[in-house]
Length: 438
Image (cartoon, rainbow, N blue to C red; front, side, top):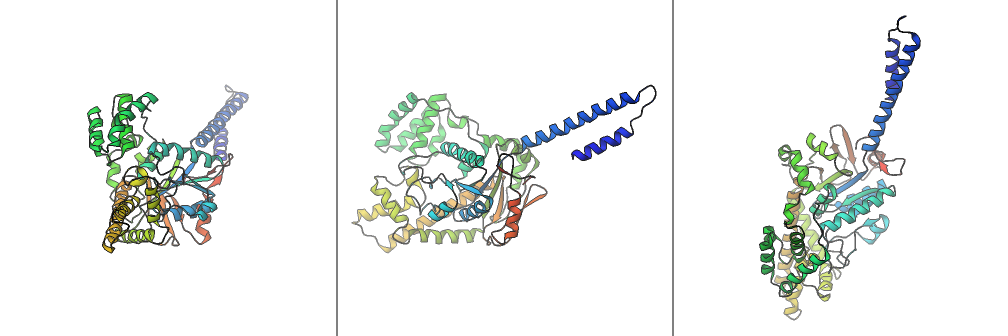
C-alpha cells in the first residue's frame, strides 16, 4: 500500500507544471512537502489500524450434550488455547457428573479456568462470573494464548460479551439491614412473604424469581435500598446493543435448529466494533429429535454406576443441603436426585422400580426443557454462527464469517486445521491475532 502511494506520488510529481514564474527549486520543495504529508498520512492510518485491531476470543455454546467441550478441546490443542468454563454448575466442587465437568486428563492436557472454585453451599452470580471470566481472559491473552470460552449458560455469556450493567453495590450497612429483614422469613421458609416484601419495596419482577432463590431476592432488595430503584431500572449493555441494531436483526432470527446462521447485518457489524474484544462465537445444535434422544441417553449414563449423580446428590444431602435451597441444589439433575433420595430415606431406604423410573423421567424432561430454552435464548444472539452438531466433526464445515472470509472447522486431517491455525499469528506482544479479518 505504501509503495503504491509513493508510486502515485511520483506520477503526480512528474506531471507537476513549473514555469519561469515558478522556479524548479520551489516545485521540488513543494513536492517534498506533499511527499512528507502523504507518508505521515499513511503512517497515521497504519497506526490507527493497529490500534483498532482487537484481541480475539473464541466463544463456543450450545444446548446440553451438543459437544461443546469436545470442540473446545480440539481448538485449544491446535490454537495454543486455554478454556474458560461458562457453566453455572461446573464452578462447584464435587458436582462433576451432573455438570459434565471435563475429566482430569483433559484438564491436565489443556488449562481450564473457573472450575471447582466454590463449595456447593456458596452462591455464584452472573456479575461474579463476568469479573472472573474477564480476568482469566486477560491473563490468557497476556501469556500469548487464545481464550476459548465454552458453556451453555446464556446470561453468563451475554454479560461476558456485551458487558454488565452498572448496578450500584450495596454498602455493608445496607447489606446487613437487608439480611436482618429477610433472615427470619428465610428461616421460616416463608418465601411468599419475602417476595411480597420486595414487591412492596418497588420491584414487581421479584414475584417471577425462581422459588427459594433467596440470593437474587436479597440482591434485588439491596439495589432498591441503595439506589431507590429496582434492578430493571438500570440499562443492560446487551439491550442497548439490540436497540441500536434496530428491528432488522429480528427478522433474521428464524433459523432451524440445525442450520448455520451466518447473517450479520451491517448495523450489527458497526456495533460489534464497540465490544472490548473480537468475539468469534459458535453455537452447536442439531435436529430436535436427535438432540432429545442424545439428552435422554446422557441422563441414563449420569445415573448409572456407583459414582454417578446419585452419589453426588447423597453427598450434598449429607452436607446439610436441601433440594432447591441454593444455586447448586437447584441445578438440573441434582434437584431431582436429591428429592428422590429424600423420598427413599423417608421410606427406610427403599424405592420401587416405578419411583426410580419416575425420577429418571423427570430428570430427562427437565434436561430437554432446558435445552429448548437454550435454543430459544441463543436464536436472539445474532453474534453466533450456528453449526450442525449432529454430523461428525470429522467432516469439513465451511462457515462464512462476514462477507468474504471463511473459517474451516475440522478435527482431521491436518490441512484444514493448518488453515485455521494460520489465521492466528503472534504479534509483537506475543498475543495471537489474525493478520486479516477472521
